[in-house]
Amino acid sequence: MSHAPIHPEPSHRPFPHGFRRVRLELAREKNHPGGSAQDGYILIIPLDAEGRIDVESWREHRDLCRIVRFRAGEDDEIGHLRRKPGGSWTLHYDAAGGVEDENIRHLENDHFIIGDYIAIREEDELHTFQVASVDYV
Image 1 (spheres, rainbow, N blue to C red):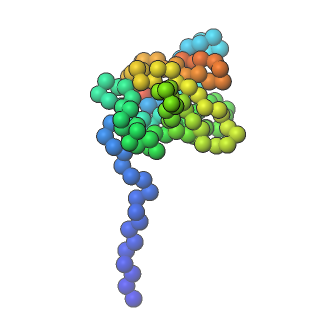
Image 2 (cartoon, rainbow, N blue to C red):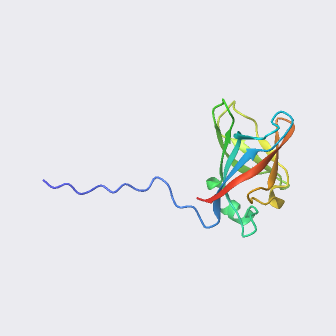
Image 3 (cartoon, rainbow, N blue to C red):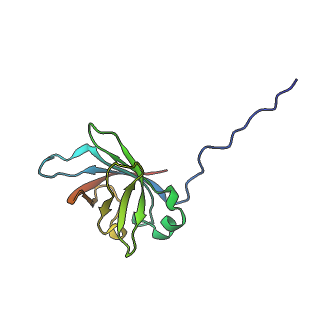
């Protein structure tokens, strides 16, 4: 009796050109004078050659645009990037009863280049995060 080898389908599909894994870490602020590498976000998003979000690629592959919100001493929150009518952007979390949507100000104008800053509104308070790394997915 011979058994044919089993070749399972890959559990993921490759990401399109331009997708990057961006790590944002909390920048210096009143309660964190040295910033915090343990508080931030990981974004899987398409970027153009200038390091800005590629809106057309996001539209075409929005299901691949994932986010992870990490905080010291807390469970990670997982979700995805959404665009609201009018063009504003939010980080939307998948778990019911978890963290509410958070707004990213001026996302289409931000550069995701190491050292640059991104402002995110969390629970009606604006926080600044620094781009710590940008890697191929």
